[in-house]
Image (tube, rainbow, N blue to C red; front, side):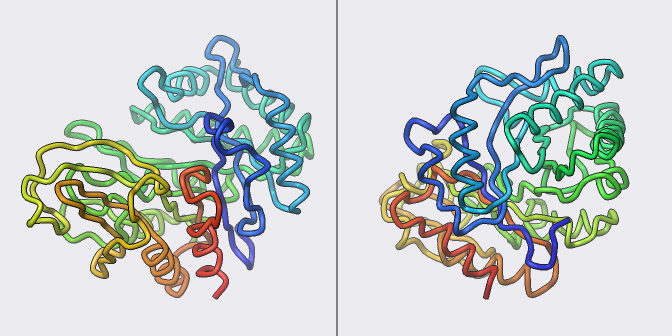
Length: 337
């Protein structure tokens, strides 16, 4: 469970190890740190572990800081692969599902992890969701049978329903509530236009937002202490049509992609928008929407004071300013005060 003091989570990305090695993780600002990600073999259901020494280095850093280490499985799709494909195949087959479950427990115990996180981003069909429910039930049962004392968590879409064409598919909230210790809500990547992609309050009726996502999960019966709000350490960049029309929702020529916070020029001086609880920065025709120190602080204060969540997680550690860790500190301070 999230516990009385709550979750202060952070995802460390293996793919960033060459520029942000485990030794640089600011453990003092966190309670739970996620090693992200390892894949799944669709043929036999077992985890694909290819960086043993890197995992050991991660574990040494996290446990020396007296924090919880969680192994995250899957992750977002890239231009070359979609980890969800293998997870879907494995979850649908009872034999592979059992092999997967045993493999996760075996690897967690081999390296000394304190928990396991399924980052299935995202299921494609309602059948996938049904298989997910079964997977969580069997996972919890097997962990208990083996007396493994492992936390079980999952990273999920911001709301309980995922649009799929003209239909929507729905998460198995009952199974999640019964079998997982907490869920990480991906409260970002909402909007394709110049807007706050991680906004806590929506300024338009049809866009996603943090409060709408949290409410969705609460209405589905998952209690606040199991809901962990996601905060991105990256922004989105656009090219404006007119540099003089540069507020939230301004017209654009193009979307230019994801930009880590540490690569947004002058990010610390961006404009704070109180209506969405977000920040943005406009420089000539370049426009960045992101979360900075101010918006992170207000977002966490709003959620905690309203007893909406049991903690937060940040994604990803290597994307902030790696010297002062300004964003990690701001989030930690906001949760504690």
